[in-house]
Length: 498
Image 1 (cartoon, helix red, strand yellow):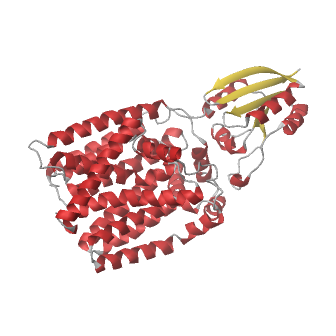
Image 2 (cartoon, rainbow, N blue to C red):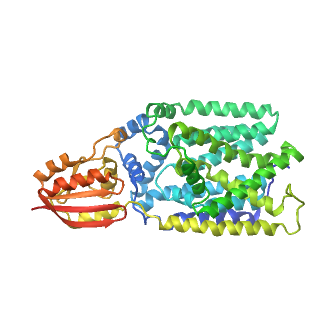
């Protein structure tokens, strides 16, 4: 069995992609600005708004691996401004295109029904929705990955040069969105190994990868120079970190969703093995592509995690479209393909339909979790300072990493009347931020207390509690706490001189 082509003509053929685009956009737009920006998003906005010279310097020396996303965001911000909803809507747009390409790939390999199921499973994945609502490059990387797979499948079946040019471009785009896109070609190399002696396809794939390798050299250079400086805080590879990553990849809806998702993926793996044994490599090709494009990149990222600590769901976002395709293939197997353990039953499509309904029901739990999840409320911090801050008040952060957030929510940072940020400094410099070891402590707080009658402390739950307590004690020698506002994961405290 080769690639399955469904009908593309007429209005009926347009219904699935239009419906998938509408569902993806709706899930992405729902409550898109409810959450405060988090640190990485504020970093992205800060870089995108830099003067041109500094922007180019930053990309070349520090952020080449995300440079394409920053370029897109820079243009996006220039057109629509820096509201949270607007800057995040770029990722929503990328998510819509990612779902549509996933639908196209599934339709080409298995038919229109399986393509629609793959798109629906991807759109309903809570962590896919999370990346669609964040001003970060993860959605662009996922899009590049599924485009690369689509170009690989078309290029292998047709041999046309344009598909391999598109493949090299997609791989390059993926790496300039994030370096973990380097794992994507592993799935294609594995799939082609199962195809047999297709020398033309091997020459074209190796040539495309060689071209992409030359194009991504600047990103690899920055990665080598900056190695380890941005991922040191990630957890090492442990059973718990792996469990967390794969549960999140399934949609974050709890153990039931994870077990059911990977059970469906397992069905597709079983069918791929059966097709290889009984029907040959040509018939098994769609199934092999579905398996290898998820399993091998995931294994590659896990292998890199041993050295670089990248066992975080964000680094596995590149595999989410492939996992959706694999799950859709498993649902197809339940609904219509003869399974190894018995003959196909009449009305077997009902089994697939029930499996899809159960999966969507479990995914709703993951979506409810994401929409209810909150991050540090720095928008609320800015509101407190704007309401009660006075000229010559001092504001102290215990971690310079959060300065970008404070500045984002104060469009004209620390100018004119009102509270003034005195530590860690009056302006945010994103680099060499990752090597910045300035952390407020008792000595800094005592110096600030001698100069200012009112001092504000902005305390994150991630700050060192012992250092914060020592700083409070040092401040209490001359000041008394007059105000304390508990926000989500961050506290605002005001101290007045006695």
